[in-house]
Image (cartoon, rainbow, N blue to C red; front, side):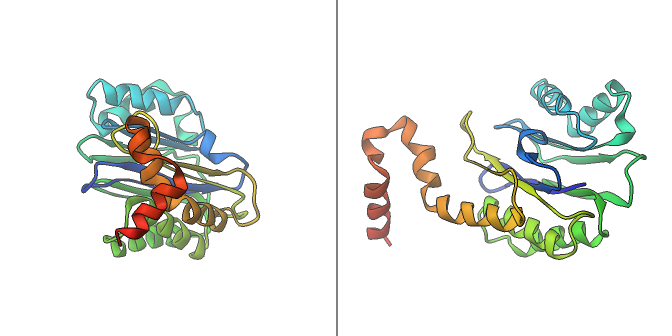
Length: 229
């Protein structure tokens, strides 16, 4: 009982996933990203081993479709899963197993997959896609969160949501943004609150490892940014 939106930003090359579900700790089991390579999201009766398998196949140069095919061939329980892959060229593919219940499916476009299982209706997915389309001027993370919120507002999933996560990578081996809400009555709203607090510092934390003297302390860096506006 999960829904998510996964995307590759054409302008920056960043990959990101925003996701929410009823059980606790969705961010620890479902989204997997390798910078410059692609992403895999595994949902429904989740097998987290399939995420790294997908990433390893992408590293070998497999296309998104080939990765999905290989995962399906390797998993005897594939009809209980829901999986998507986006590769380095923005090719996007999703697979929803036949044993998923209620409305389950995906909206797939180049550089984008919005999908969910056991949803209130198809509108959860289409609302995410519509909001993504309307947010072209936004940063990747803002755009993903706006879309996830739209999916929630369109009905979300049966049983409601209790955990959520936002994960994105740029060119570094560490995340650009990695936020998780592991148990909350309104996890999508809480994820947005946390993101809004850390958003001004994301470029700081991403750039400082390579230039600690130049970036300095958080407060000083923020003051310099304000002075440039």
